Amino acid sequence: MAHRYGMLPSEILARGTTQDIFVFDVYTTYQQYVNEKQARKHKRAEPPIAKPASEDLLERYNRWSERKNNESN
Image (cartoon, rainbow, N blue to C red):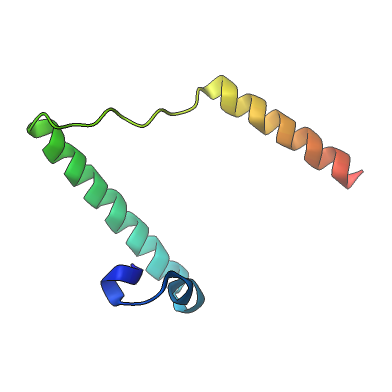
């Protein structure tokens, strides 16, 4: 968004509204989807980014939750 409007990222965060940032996020997500679709079409697809396993996320959440509960007590 900063590149498109010729602004610094810090300026976007300071002056941009929630709607501005939301619309830009939707736009960049769609652009990424279109680029990946074209890459698959031309067999240039890069391997997908590894996503953490659900068990890993659950373990991290549980550790975070325990720390948060310990800090509040």
